[in-house]
Amino acid sequence: LTDRLDDVFRKIRGHARLTEENVQTALREVRLALLEADVNFKVVKDFVDRVRERAMGQDVLKSLTPGQQVVKIVHDEMVELLGGEARELDLKASPAVIMVVGLQGSGKTTTCAKLALKLRRELKRKPYLVPADVYRPAAIDQLHKLASQLDIEAFPSTTDQNPVDICTAALEEAKRTGHDVVLLDTAGRLHVDEALMEELSAIKAKTGPGEILFVADAMTGQDAVTVASSFNDRLGVTGVVLTKMDGDARGGAALSVRQVTGKSIKFVGTGEKVSDLEVFHPDRVASRILGMGDILTLIEKAQADVDADEAAAMEKKLRKAQFTLEDFRTQMRRVKKLGSIEGLLKLIPGMSQIRKQLGEVQMPEKEMARVEAIINSMTKAERATPKLINVSRKERIAKGSGTTVLEVSQLLKNFTQMQKMMQRMMGGKGMPSMPKMPP
Ligand code: GDP
Ligand code: MG
Image (cartoon, rainbow, N blue to C red; front, side):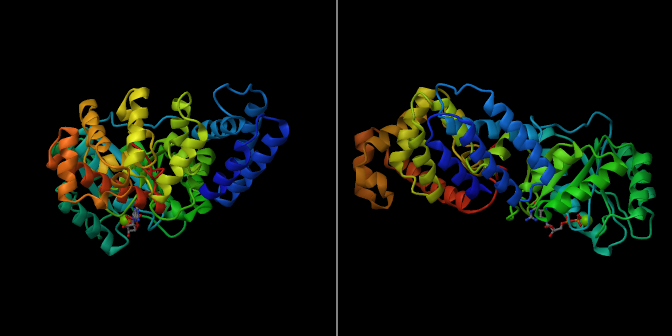
């Protein structure tokens, strides 16, 4: 989808006016691109109609070219389509019950463990894991293993118990032991079936969950949408977790699920590890789907300073991992004009992901000045090829910038690491902090 849309936008970028004709052409392409990405037909049609309506009625903003303007409208509408703001979990009850449902293999058990970890880490909650899939012998064991690995308590379910009884008893046990969130890992089937729905309805009636999260495998595309609808009709789902977004899912399911069910996507699974769960941010996903990281926002913000071509060139460099220290410095200088560095780091595609992986590295203004001084003291060749920088060169740079060899080394190390990660992120189809996307 990304490549496809890139082409579309490149074509219209050159135009000087938003005419009916070039909007039509662009929208035709957008429509095809969305359909190819497995977005539901009806969803695409409504979407394109809305964009057309907005595009035609609007004056071209002074700061944007017509091409950018169409991109912006498409982006804004896509954010809307994906659900606007990120939604929080309803955890008001005590204990709050979260029921996790979905087809077999969609990622329910893994998601329960991931959620429990997230709730403990970020909200300081005391979660309780409840295996309620008694049909597959290994299923209970799987959750028990994850629980002990995370040092989170789990209900000692066994396969001879009835799932409804398990959940009821587990809720009592959670109250008794002072747990404030209970995660019910329910059974799945290969297909939606009546017996399963009966069972899930009974569990819902007995436990009164504040959240019923439907887990959908993003790789299954349109099927995920159909299945989501059946679960929603029977159970009244409160939100969706889209798993396996780290694979080469085409992203279309994300766009359709919300539109068809009217339920927001709350989280996305981005890997097999227990920490691979991210809050779903519609704006970032929209950017990812449009293949721009948050570069669009960058364009908007920096309009006065940067012309679109320069930004496009920068983006290309990022994609090809030809991002050099020189570019890094240019970006830094621009940030100074823009204000917050945190803000800018968020805008560079994949960057916030990198920041997370580096462990919340902060870069205060003072540090930024030092980094700039170090880069200033390098030769052009050194900036382009940091490998050239041996010990004696490091000494020279340290002296020139009023820093130490250690600080120079540190910067080089961080930069190399960042480059590698960028390469991974741009090359990989992972979501830059969901667009494998930002925080
Ligand atoms: P369940 O049958 O719905 O409980 O599904 P499981 O939680 O057992 O997951 C099925 C498989 O999908 C397992 O191999 C998981 O490791 C894998 N899985 C779950 N979520 C993700 C994800 O976000 N990314 C990737 N790559 N794999 C996932
Ligand atoms: Mg399971």
